[in-house]
Length: 231
Length: 141
Image (cartoon, rainbow over all chains, first blue to last red; front, side):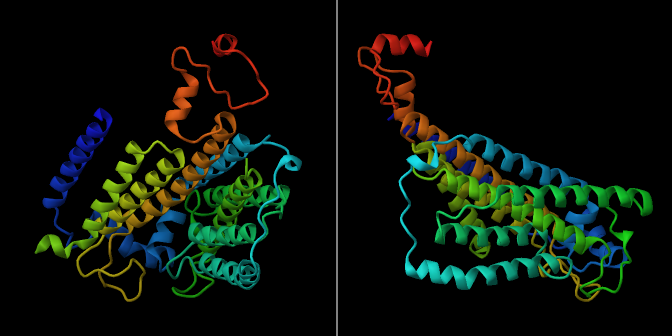
């Protein structure tokens, strides 16, 4: 009873705080200083149309490297926590997937992977990029796992894709330090014309690497979780 | 009528309160993770809404000189979404482990097993251990 009252009081306090912030809020009429810098300089300097991808991959590329590391660590910890579960032989066999799911996944998985590749490759031109496309790729993996619960993904392959793309990411960043303006500078390759697929220098390449890495990490998390199902 | 126009803040408010309530009031660990995700979603929506510039378009360069919404919240929330997925996976992995160890995902039952009420034998999850209440209490210390 006391606990419930406490919950309601906390809820009321948070609600009041948020409402006070909200009542004093007016939407912005123009971009702030940092936002305006990015809006004005991204297209001429880096040759990318998508400001968000330009900031993620180039302006704040180091932070993205850190974030990819966070993802890698959590994927590794999920694997570690779930490792050494009960042996597969003692588990009940899972419920087989229905006709609809099995057939539907065969139709949809290639399309999902194609969409993921499209979103990754066009990240510097249209909404999208490595993280979004990588998540779409992993959703294809999820559908595969749902359709065939007994399917086992090769963890070795996933780890190899992940570490290879991660190492290339860092190596390209270091090359930028030597041959271009700084760590992860995208002008290592020619910038090209705005709006073409092969433009914006290194940006599509790094998007592809991030996409592969994120897709591999999410897939490895999903595979680890699915291999410990049922208890 | 201004408050009605900013309807996405109503959605943020509703989701935030729902998520917060689920996190603190529910004993089920899986429900807690779901609540955490709902709360997270409200924060994502809040940031994206605040990044909106009146009359601005999506931050994709089309023709020079047009007004864009602020790209910085988009960047921030993109990373937050990815990290949110990772923390959810980690939380679920821990719940799987807790379920294996205690045989339940209800918080109250886990507390009861960790700290058995006086005079009653603790219900061990592992059925193989047929220890008496005393020796089980001994082993716990």
